Image (cartoon, rainbow, N blue to C red; front, top):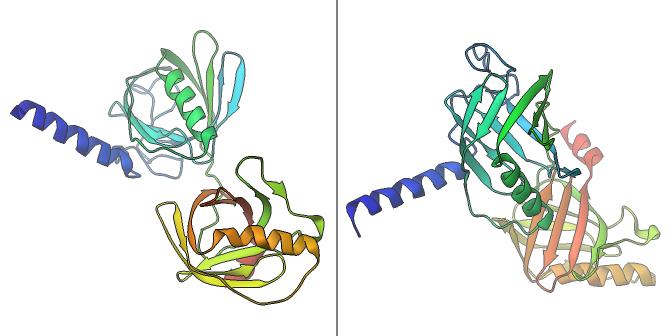
Length: 290
């Protein structure tokens, strides 16, 4: 292998590593609060709308007359150094960008290669990457909102308002709302069990209730996966719906499961395909903070 190819490979590896970090090559693009630094007036030579130095959260993409809502966490930052970066739904993305007045033109993106299990995130990301690479955009900024529009009418809507922080995985009481088998959509829990089944992860363990009995088990989480130990439960007998739900939830334990966080929602997928949806109990978190 020639010295030139080795150096090129090293540069590409370093670039991908940098993209995987939260900074995304934009360390000099203002603050993360969405207000920019005091001296960052944005635009190009003082003219045009202020688009640089702001963390723009993607709200939606309208392409071919169809509007697609953006997944949680999708954002874009545009630097005055001619670089743009962010997350388009799943992967971290970086590219060159030309900003001339109110006209933006994005270069070919360089992306990490993470495969998200949520198909909606991957689909949105592909559509947004395709849209941003098709040509020039006209930017319009109105307060904390920005719209990028193409000549044919496709548009991307953004806001600079900070999103409400997502509930942390550990320490949060996750109330189970639905259970499915992976082949069909998760079904809501029976009405009599609403708010009863819950899980809390902390200190390498999970504690909670399965709809009937209390449960405790080891639970080590890392890189989107949880390794569960064998469960220890109380031994109450409950009506039919409660025991049926409990048997489904027990499939999580004594094995590995995937987990995905989206703001106040937790999705757990057991090894056999059982899917469990849960929501953060904000009231419980607020009480703990007092």
